Structure formats: structure tokens, C-alpha cells
Length: 443
Image (cartoon, rainbow, N blue to C red; front, side, top):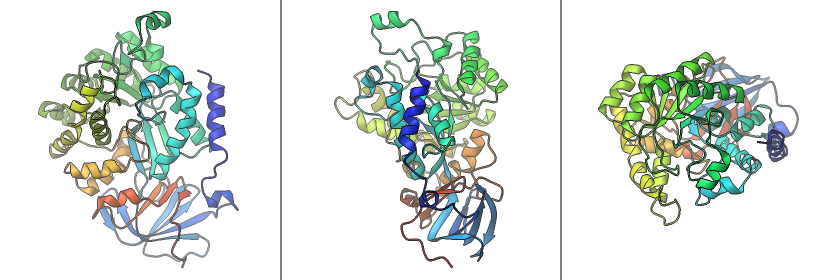
């Protein structure tokens, strides 16, 4: 990996763009006053009446009921809008996007190519209202995260896993699908590449992720849909291997997310102490009971399930070994999510975008409501609950002292969840990235 080339690619993509007219012109005023006709209270799940949100130095300074008049603040009037905390997508892959060419591009393209693409994906995600994401797999994204933090490119706050941890032949084994000659030439991947086969390997792989600069650990506890392998649900770690990963991760302050479709793999991941189960397709009452007992979160990724089930109907979109998995597993996830909600499993928001198109993340809200979750619950899943999964306490609510991450949509999304598809105001860390074309006049 040429890290210098990656950095140059990211910088070259992002430098021409300014976050907003506010940033491109004279310096923004020290205080902004957002006049929200309604505010979503993520703690209670209720929509409150008109409030003024004061923003100063990237933080929420004060939340005042009603329309406050402040001579020393620039007003942004969001008439007939509901302001919510910035949304968090807990499962994305910003380094790529599914297409019929995805399986060959790894042989034809360089990391720099994926870095260039990731810049556009990051901006689309931010403009869709997602001010934070947890990226669960992809070395490029570690550098994208740094570029966003440095202000070189537009994008959400990124909590990056870097390389996922798998077993030999597992869902994230980077050599799956290679021919015998190429596999022998490269040699078997090991902990540095994220492939483990023992407790010692497990510890080394986590330590390597720390060395690489990861923020979170991602394991592939079962087979997967899109990997070039037959099984989409077979367990791929022992409980002791999972425990070794989780215990070592805890030493470095990491939380562990587990990709898992099959029941046995989920059980082992839960017993091993992971923070969240991703996808959870074949979750049953026993698994749900274990999740409630251990406090394990569930991130359904309904969007990805619907996407792959639809594309499986198209000849040639997926390789032959992948197509039956996509058709079988993808169609089940939305139903599983509804059952998990009714059984009291803790649910947080995630889409697996990169499977589906970046920027369409908010459709997951609609799918969650279709699965039987109240709209307010879905919004909480992407705000205060997502912050709990990440282990951060400075975002996910509109309160004084928290990060000024605020999204506004016309109408009331609790009454009509489709409003989330019409985001026209986005603020991250107090910086306005998107605003209605015609603001109501300041008062």
C-alpha cells in the first residue's frame, strides 16, 4: 500500500470543495441560531415544538424553547422543518459500491482508485444526513477518515475498522476466489492481513489493527452473502477465538462488531462478548434470548438484504456461487428485524451501504418502519442508540454541550417517515454543509 499516494489522491479530490457558502466567503459568525419549527428529542422519542438551537465553536451552546431573537447571531430559519440530531449509520463500506464488476476490480485497480471513489461516497453520505458512520472494513477508509478530520474532503465523522478479521476461507479472507497459482505465489494470508486460525493469531490481528490506526474491530463470525464462497451462514470462529479478540480489543479501547448470518456463529459471537451482531439473518428465539441476556446490539442492515435479493434476479450481476446466497439470505433480513424488535432486542441503525448505493442510507428508516418499528424508534436507532453502540456520549442528542450535528427535514418524520428522504439541512460540528435553497427571512 502506497500511503503517500493515497493521501495525495484524497487531498486532490477534496481540496477544491468548500463545505458551504459560509466557509467559502467571509469567516462564519461565532454564533449560529437555528430556528427549528420542531425538534426531535432522541431521549424521549417525542417531537417537541418550536425551539432555537444556539451553536458556537462546533458545539450546541443552548437550546431555547420558542423563537429566540439574538442580535449577535446569524439566524437560519427552518420553517416547517423538524430538526433531529445528526444521523449515524453503523455499517457502511465507503471504499466501494456493488456492481457486476466488483469481483474483478480488485485485480485491476489500485488502492488509489478506491481512494478517489471513496471521496464522492463520503460526500453523498454526509449530504444524506449522516454526520457519523462506522465503516466496517476497508484499509482505504482509515485514510479517508484522516482526510475528513483534516478538512481536506467533505464527509461524515468516520469510526473505521480497517481490515476485517476472518478465518482461512472465511467471509473476509482476501484471497477467496484466487486461483491456485496466484494463491501459492502470494502465500497464505495471516493476522497482518486479518486472517486468523488460533487464539494467538486472534490477539495478533487485533494488535495489528491498533497499529494500523483502527477505531473499532470487525469480525466475520459466519459466511457471507457476497464473498466468493459457497456458505453464507456457517460458523467461522470458535468461542475461544472470539473471546481472545474481544479481550484483546478491550485492552485497546476497541468495541467489536460481528458480521453474522447463521445461528451458531451468532451464538459464539455473543458468548464471546461482541458489542453488536450485524445482519443476523437466521436469528431465532434462542439467539434473541442470548442477546438480551448479554446486552448485545443488533444492526439489521435491511437495505443490503433488499438490494442483493433484487440484484440476484439479474443474470450476470453476481457470480454463480454468490447468486443463490443473495437470493435466499437477502430476502429474510427485513422479517428478522421485525421479529427482533417485537422480542425486545436492542436495535441500532445500519445499512451496509457499499453493497447498495451510497447516499440512499435513509431508506433504511423506511424499511425499519415497514418491518413494524415505530418511526420514533427508528430515529432513535440512528441517533442516541447509535451513540451508545459507539461508546460516545457527545453526540446523538440535541442538548447543550453536545456536538453540533443537526439534520432538518420538511414536515414531521414521526408522522411520515418518508420525510427522511428529503434532507435539506445538514450541520456537522457546527459547520453547515447543506441548507434549504430559500431560507425563510431571518427575524
